Image 1 (cartoon, rainbow over the protein chains, first blue to last red):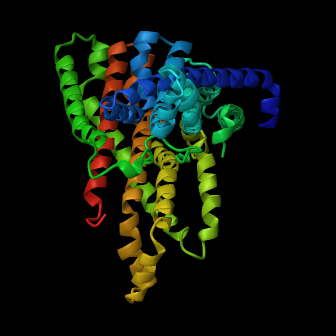
Image 2: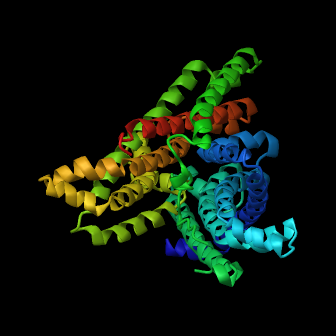
Image 3: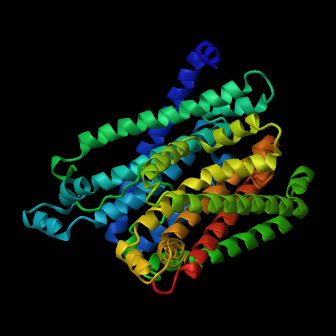
Length: 213
Length: 268
């Protein structure tokens, strides 16, 4: 196993980098989409149960099924992987962003308005900073889920470490089959841990001092 | 800021969310409870209509032959149900053990390990088990992988649910002369049941979705339609497979929801 990894370290690192890149990009997109949706949803109380139902139903759809649905539209490769990972990444962030925005004390919003802050200013300087810790925990969940979805997307030639898992599968019985699958799986677990730590750090830096716990 | 959603590696539909606000049937769950079966039925009827009217070439027609589809649905359901039963049979007793005073200290360690295990990608786990257990049939390898994957939500919720039982109620049970076992069966488990059921529903969703990957290790299931569609390069086959899996997953999640409502003890 060790020799195997050392021999192929370059390819392994490239795959790991691609995996991380795909996941980070997808989670970034997802965060923007989810926060925008959450802002809209919390302004229209009637839509909220619908949004929650949609996000619960969305998480129910197996990732492999979504990949099958996307394939005719986006084709084999990176785009399908990115769209699929982004889709799943949106849902936990959306749910947490809605909870977070609703949890902002109305009195605070009121006083911001009283100080003459406009509606968008209130959103940017009061609501979002206060909701941020909750949104962040949604992002952590998304990140973990995305690692696994990205691995499955390798079946349709998406980038990343998943490729080696499928390569191992096609060589079952061969001498490197287990090495391929095992090093990729361990790589994904390690990557998940590293990105989770990085996110904690980012969270610490981006959470406003007053709401830090 | 008092809301704190504790979710290190929290899974998709954990009954977490803003749980306390949910009454017997809030707006959202009413939509889900009645909307999902309607959606599934309509979706399935659309599929049947499409299947009867579409012009398919011979490969597509044989991949989407009714007997083939029925077989894959049956395999998929069997994988889901057996794996879920294994999960409940292991995770609930384990959760009970880990909340008993003598073993309580082990709970954080076990949940920590389970959490870390959850970070392993499902496809990697399935493929590796398949390689390591080459003497096993594909079906049982898939069951093992699915069960491993589905254990965490039930285990965690069993522990949380039992820990959430008011100790004075346990005390009162003992005061009435119940033995430790009766207190567990008559007081603690009924009170923890809603939380445990939420865990079981989450686990069902995980298992039904992951079962789509069983086809990679020759264990059958509806993933077969998608892989067939991809390898044969037939869009209708892969889309039909994807739609049918999604419908089945929604249906299974709905069954979990209904079970949750049905087994809820009256007093809660």
